[in-house]
Image (cartoon, rainbow, N blue to C red):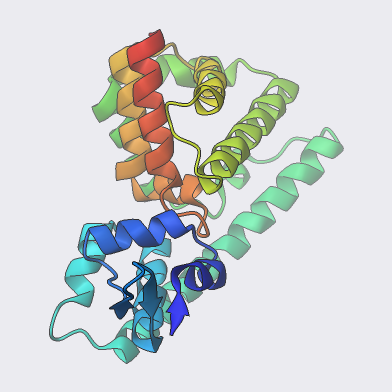
Length: 250
């Protein structure tokens, strides 16, 4: 039997995440001691593995619970399916890495690339879907204005903006891992920084900023960017912090 802290450490997730999984019935401990401590057996460790695999593949927690609780669920079939899906991802990531390497080389040498080479490895249907989702959520005017603004930026500006986003994401993940509340001064300071970063492209009002936070949770690709595998729940933490910031400051 393993304690909740031992499981959290082994899976590289937070204790709070395991508590959340227990609260929603997704992963119950095998036993709860008289002292209130949760204990997990091999069965729960294997179920957690499945949960984290499905999270990596972009499924919502409700979907994962339905799959795992289906009487017809077969762990071996699921593992083979995960392997196939991840193998396809590896192939795509190799293409994306080659695109990144080519782009780095072209920027370092100040050379131009063929337009299509900038997007090698990104499926056309994926790019089209991203744009459709953005237009549906924010409207054509805002999306196309943001695209025009992005095209007007220099390479240096784009690099600075990307570096700032990585720093902001790292700060959110650190605060979430430390158990900081979304409404705390520390979390709200990072959220204000995030709002300023968003304003590089457009200036959302309170409703739009709250909506952007919901996208981070509801869209598997956005959620995966922030949860980063080892920290599931970070996207929800950010969304809550953004909603609080919108109510307080916008």
